[in-house]
Length: 318
Image (cartoon, rainbow, N blue to C red):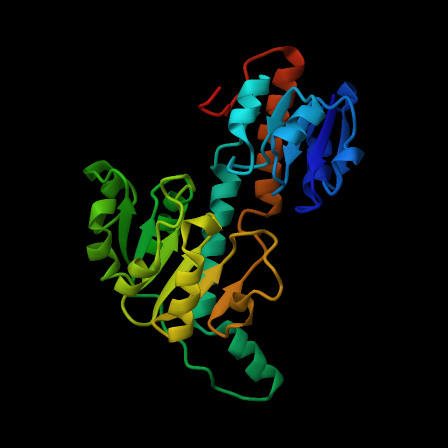
């Protein structure tokens, strides 16, 4: 099988996949830069996008048998074009090491903002002792927007910090409230009432046409002054200009971001030059544990394709 990674982001992915695929199969794993369609390798069996747009032109040129996402999101793939060409598109559902890794990273961002970690590091270098003064996580109200695979391990970790945990979801019910250990669970129609009592909003919903920009300027305005926003899901869930304005005005106390509207984010983007923003390069799910879990899921579908067996995680359009 000839397997082609699109793009040079997430550099360890190809190595881990090579280690996971059966040696005797003799699979060829290629990393293609994605810069020039004319340099695309030929005779491709599996195309793996890594934050690379897979449009109709790329699908037609590749003649691939499967587009396999390295992880959960499929928003970068033209599903309608793939469906018209008869090319299945599959993902690896969030869970296991990936969900746990993202949950831990969300906690990292929360604590780093509350304890003003960048300023603390600067103070050490400048010989300043005993500052800055941080804020405890205990006793804060944390809202999980989106109650899925990532929110569950995050909820379990946050409860250990003695927070008041609430949820915002499309379909709240008693079972979710109990499973996630929530004190309250709000429907999207009750968003404003939910946000008014939220000290820390953690975005962990799925990006879709319905959820794009679902946290807008008006929603941010309903958060209490000094509230924090954490996004470990997808940049498009939060209105970009609204977030910038809320941070500049000081209404938002800070933001912890691992995902962006265009990736990689422009190094001149205003968010990267704000003192109240901690930004990481889409690494929430990138740990050795999660990479091996994802590689196992990807390899399982490659082996199924090889054997003519049903594929897992194929999109709903197909």
